[in-house]
Image 1 (tube, one colour):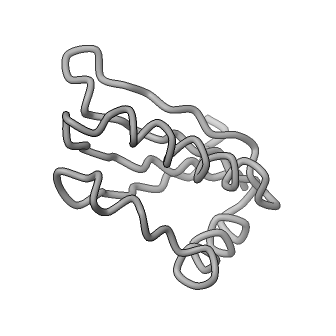
Image 2 (tube, helix red, strand yellow):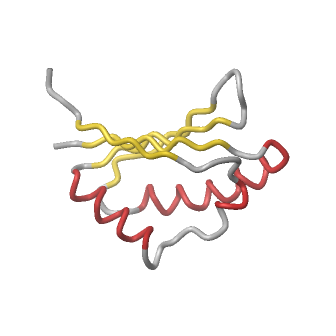
Image 3 (cartoon, rainbow, N blue to C red):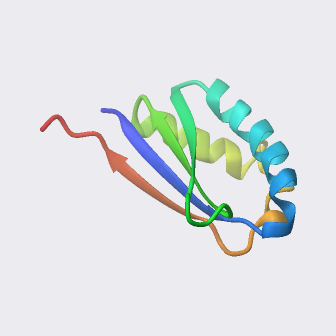
Length: 97
């Protein structure tokens, strides 16, 4: 069953250009990861430092393998200095309602 993951980020306003470069690279890797159906970035119209990565995965298993990759060899080390707060990740199962 498909899975949607929302990664909610609050960025430091003075580094938005740097964030675009880093996240562009990171999300390129994410989009190429096996089981990823796509990633869109949503930027809050009222707050340009509030971004959400809207990730679509083939399955919970594909998402779990990606999270394992990011916790290990694919760890992102240059994102933390760009953040104004801790990111949050929420996962949703796509329901056929």
